[in-house]
Image 1 (tube, rainbow, N blue to C red):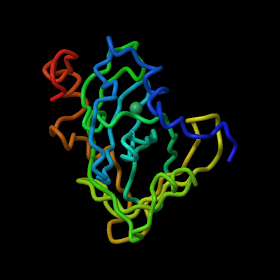
Image 2 (image 1 turned 180 degrees about the vertical axis):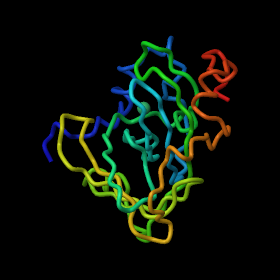
Image 3 (image 1 turned 60 degrees about the vertical axis):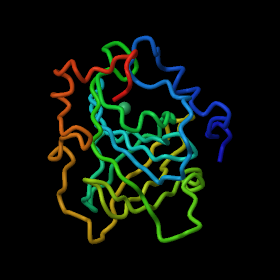
Length: 212
Ligand code: MN
């Protein structure tokens, strides 16, 4: 692989994430808190109405959330291939972030925790970080909405952090023809829609208060 696509140095895996945000203004977490790396194989999908609607698919790997922005969102429909842009790693504390990012800030808009759960494979030696580096990820998701075998395949090598990948669901027992994520629009964390999060000031995160 070209070196320009190398992942960020391990010491500052969140440098790019932090460089884009003013934490005096956005309610998003800065990261860096001591979160135990418990080996949990977690994933989360956030529905993010920014300048353009997209879904952020994130896997916990080595104490960060390795992330893709999926404009049309994940689907259980095995005939539908979804473009996914590999974006900067996010801090683990982002896992259950739901709230309003102020207009004018990076990613300004509203965010819900659209789905979450764990992932697994049949291979006990499987290394998700290595699979991401190789651009070829096959995992079974166990979420509230998403289930079954998903595949992420890197399609090209754009400058660091912007490669285009494809996200698709395999033909398996969890596949559902025509399944549309927009038909499943409530948060798995609070049961709320993006509109409800946007209009309820109680859920606008206060930087002086605990996250939840
Ligand atoms: Mn986003």
